[in-house]
Amino acid sequence: MNKRIAISTTLLALVTFALLLMHDSLQAKSHEPFHKDGELSKSAEELFRLLGKKVTTLKTANTFSQENLIRDGEYWDEQKKKPVHELMKKNRTALIAQLQKLGMIDGILPEQQHYIYAGLTGGLKETVRSRVMYLEELINNGYTFKYVVVMGGSRPLLEKEKEHLPEDIKTEADMMVYLLNNSGIKNNKILVVDAPMVQKADGTLARPTAEDTFVYFAKTAPENGSFLIISNNPYILRRKILAQQILDQEKFPVDATGKQANIEKMDIIFACDELARTLYEEFRQFTAQAA
Image (cartoon, rainbow, N blue to C red; front, side, top):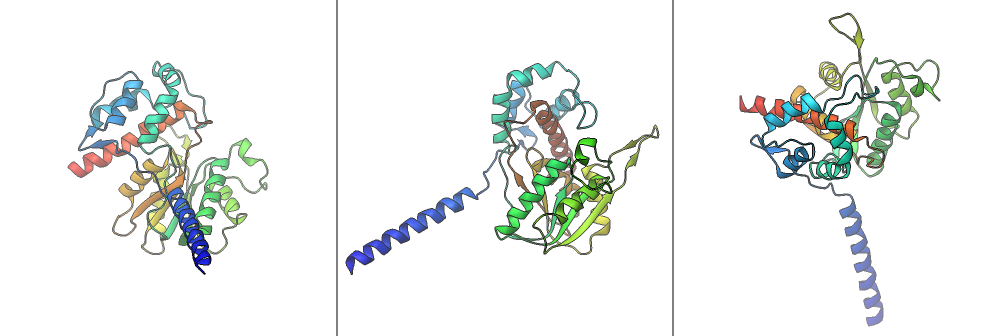
């Protein structure tokens, strides 16, 4: 009898330990904020030191970033050379370490188990496919949503995106709906935000931005409720801040989640571009709150 009790106790301990390990593996890693009351955190300061600039405030970090880190052209174009690019390449590993401390590398898990909306953010086809798979993984692990929102637009697909798609799939929004309909996500209502192309002052058309999709969602949402952004790093923080600024937080409280960044394939110039865009939203939110 005592031997059976000992075995049972041992098995219970092993099961408990395994569950604890599983629980720990699902925990989102904490990260350091970019700033406190406008003063940069130590990791943010070190990041700019690696880029050849001593910066201590959010304001000066934003100014430097907009002048030096924003890439030229659309996100699929080749980036032009800038003096800071050599430092980016030279200090790539150290820069990624600081970006990781600031929450732009590791995966981020949802804070709640249930949301009214899961907002699937747009992008190139393979990025969207990865986000659909991540959303499916969340659902399979017990996270629930009333609606899945396709946060897409009328951007024409690139030639490389059209591969293995039916001929009638021509825009980003079409492609996102197609990938959702051909996934394992079956029991959620799908809402489609199809933001139109934007006409610029010179008459040319530009793709709709993430900001445009949130504006259109707010106009067409069937009910108020919690909104979980489905993205991936290094984009999660910016998408969250942007949505919080656009969506009424009493009607649509925002959270954001996504998979970790692929460090091996990450282009450090694109990562620093996203840093600049995130800092811009951080600074815009900070100045709005201080006003």
